[in-house]
Image 1 (cartoon, rainbow, N blue to C red):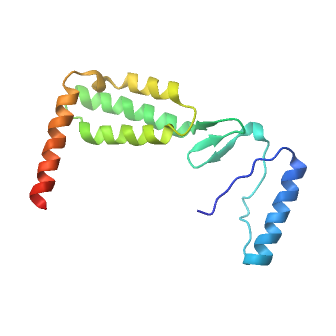
Image 2: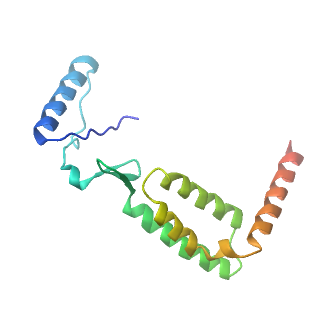
Image 3: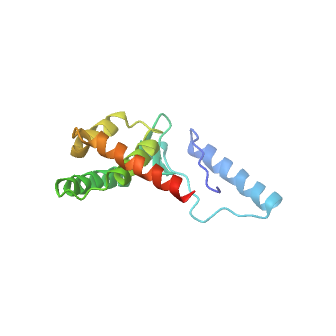
Length: 143
């Protein structure tokens, strides 16, 4: 990974540290910072690795919030048409939950899960269990 962020208190500190980094990279590694390397007020937060990082907390990027909400609507639509691939959908939900747990998103997670109508069906656990058993049996047959 070649990206990094520094959160400093003043613009003066940022200018100084950026110059020091540029000198070190040039002198010791014969590298240069990308032209997009900049400094911004900390109030804005930093878009970094799927999050918006502030000095006191992290939030999910807005695009991640919009995407999961769109996915939930799509999954619910497929569920009502009886076309939802539940194991695949559960993997996608768990992936998103795994990503979102690294920031301040508890209430968002609860809101998203509550909108997943297919999670509150009494047959959901049974369907997932049956499909997982089939997948395990198929893996055993292949091996």
